[in-house]
Image (tube, rainbow, N blue to C red; front, side, top):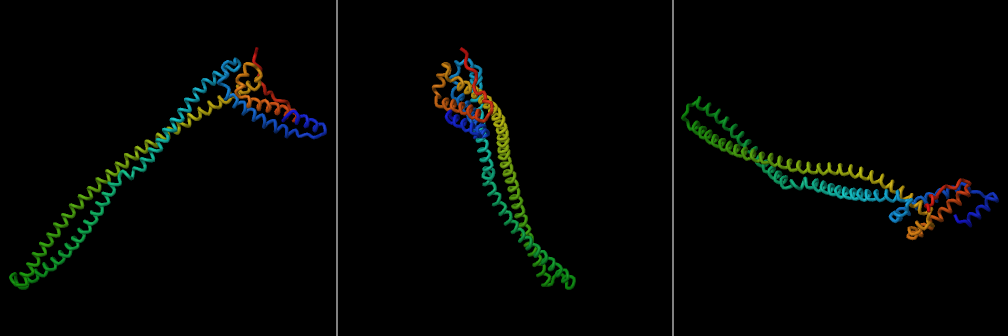
Length: 300
């Protein structure tokens, strides 16, 4: 809102053209922009305000808060670095849980296959042994019958005795083969059990380590959240101080003690001065009370 436009609107109001709400809305929007500009100006200028007595409180508070602000920012950056490392470590450990036992698992699978093969061989031997035993029992029954009928020295009795002897030898051989296979299978199963223990222990150790990383992640997240909350509160306090400084500078920019600061930000100050005028003019056109935008002028 320029003064020329203000005069035109005034003339229009004299002829019954009145847009009070529109002017009030414009004034409110411009006031919001002015408050943001005051903060920006204060943020740009506060470091040069040490010699302005009226701003000494804000200046020294900002000196203290800025140091704390930097410390908190560094703390957050460090925590984020630590958090990323914990995430990377946990992901790596979880990925290594399987990789670390791959060789042991392969060895266990080989032993399982060998145990199954030997078990199959033993089942064949047991089946043969059962057949031999059935044959032996049949011949034994035949021999008992022949002896009871014709005595112990007939050719048929002698042949049956030879057959029984051969069957006993074959059964003994099958039993020895079975026992040998049983020992091998038992030894393999013990190796498999030992491998299972080693696999479970290695995976358990790595899971425990990964869980430790997970706990670190949780604690770091809580620390970051707490620090960010403190950081946000600190920034809000600094924003208020920046705004106070910016408000003072724009209100007193013609004064010699402020002129040097203003000279570094002349464009922004000019825009803010024009904005203040526009707010006042829009407020007057809206029929409302003009807001107090200026801080007190420096003494002396």
